[in-house]
Image (cartoon, rainbow, N blue to C red; front, side):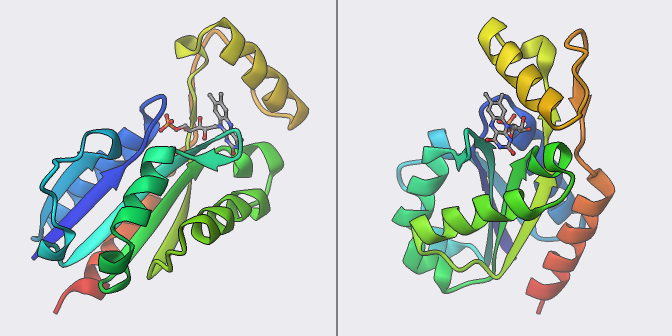
Length: 177
Ligand SMILES: Cc1cc2nc3c(=O)[nH]c(=O)nc-3n(C[C@H](O)[C@H](O)[C@H](O)COP(=O)(O)O)c2cc1C
């Protein structure tokens, strides 16, 4: 069985998440292939995969354009097989609930017309030490408004790796013959 895992990332957390997903899928037996949406092989044929996982992160209320393009381009193929959409954001951390994070997903699905078999919300990371000056100030302000951590001398990872692994396990079980 072959599983395609594609991702869009801006600061790298979704790459880490997609790598975790691909590794976990592989541990269950299927052959998982991982690609960044910005550097997909030109000859990619998603019909050769049994299932597809698409992961993207939210910046200024939107998922990466490269992820939108991937889904639009392969919409027909995606609709015909088991799929999962993983949305990475900090809305649940900043807002204290998942409503806004779910709104981002609804907006993405409306924009692409895709109906994935499963969707999963994942909290990302605040990488203050890796942001440039302006990004750091913007994120500090947004996070401060939500009562989150504003010590910009360090990074914060909110990703629940165990919950993500559980999701992957149940997805693999679902697609297994
Ligand atoms: C400039 C900037 C804008 C962001 N905008 C949002 C946003 O609108 N909503 C949200 O929930 N998270 C937002 N985030 C948080 C990111 O989704 C989070 O940091 C995520 O881990 C980024 O994943 P990536 O490293 O794969 O790009 C933003 C982060 C940055 C740096």
